[in-house]
Image (tube, rainbow, N blue to C red; front, side):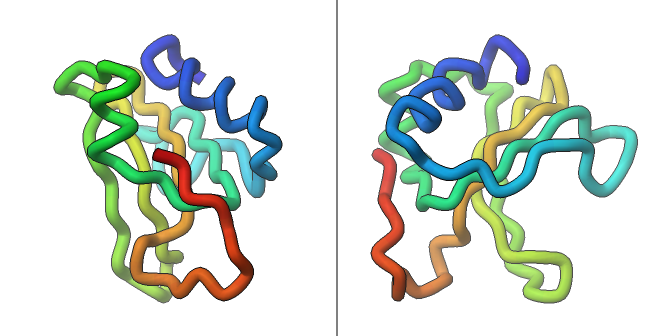
Length: 97
């Protein structure tokens, strides 16, 4: 995981949030993407971690390829993904803000 997202990844592990997947997704333009079993509140986390402008909000609304939402480092091509905001929280997943 790149240095720009490493702090968020560390916090998610410390909170005991299960890691669902880690690896290269989609294309060679994606380096390491890590998926966590929680909701990520983009604006509050961006502000709290003081992410630079090249850390962007990623929202995939395509149910066929997999609903996801999180942070992408456009400089390093790494990402931290959580559950899509449109997916109902029926299992009381944590919301990280």
